[in-house]
Length: 355
Image (cartoon, rainbow, N blue to C red; front, side):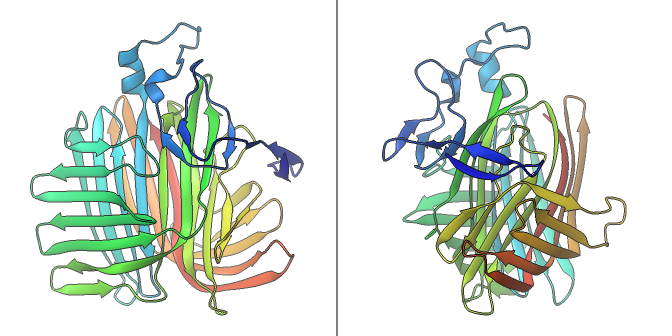
C-alpha cells in the first residue's frame, strides 16, 4: 500500500492492484469493481456486467445500465502562443462535442460546440487504451483514434477548419477506479505532458506544433453521481531546464479519499495528495490558487480566455466554464527539490453537471 495525504492532511491508503499485464475487463465475474489505482492497462470497460442497483438495492436491468452509463474524452494541446481543446461526450440522452483554439497574441477564442439528441452520431468505444471516439453532425467530423504509443486527433469542419494532431504517450498514465454515490463508480485514465505534432488550420490561419508543444488526454466513464460538481486543472509544457511537465488536479470528482491527482516530470509519474482550489466564481478575470495537501504543488493561475456553456434541459443540466491561461509557482519532485513553474499554459475548470 502507498500513502498520500488526503483532504484532512492524514495519510490515505491507495491500493496498488496486482493485476495481469493487461486487465482484460474492469468488472469482475461477480459484477463488481476493485477500487484503487490500476498499475496496468484495462482493455475493456465491460459496464453492462456491473451489478448496478437502485438506492433500495433493487437490481437494475440491462437497458437501465446502458442508459445510465456516461463516457467522455477530452484532448488538449498547449503551446506558448496557443491552446487547443476538444471533447466528445456521450450522455445517452444527448451527444455533445466541442473544440476550440485560443490565441494568446490576439486574445481571440475560436470555438464550435455541437449537440445531438439521443447521442446520434456519437460513438465512444469503451476501451480506454485503444478505443475510437467519433462525432459527426452535418459537415463536421471529429475523431480521436489510437495510434502506436499515442492518439491521433482529426477535425474537419466548414469554414476551412482542419485539425491534424498526434499526441505521443511516453509517460505512464494514471488509471483510477473509485466508487461514486451509493453504488456507482468512475473510471478515469489521465496523462499530461505529452509531445504533440501536427497543425491546426482555422480559416486562413495556421497554428503549428513545435518542440515546446505538449498535450494531455482525459478518458473517463462510469455510473456517475446524478448531480455533481468539480474543479479541475491541467497543465502541459516544457520547463526552463528542458524537462517536460504535466499536471492533473481535481477536487469534487471523487468523495472516497482517492484522488486522480498526478505530476509528470519527464517520463516519471508522481502521485499527489488532495487538491484545493481557491477562486472567485463571480469574478472570472481574477487569479486562481491551486495547491495540494502534501505541499508538492503551489501554483497561481491567471486566466486569459474562457469557454462557457450552459445547458438546462430538465433531466440534463450543465454549467461549464473552462479557463485558458498561465501558471506560475512551483512543484516539488520526489527528491524534495522545488522546481519553478513560470509562464506555462494550461486550463482551469469549474463545472456543475446533472446527468
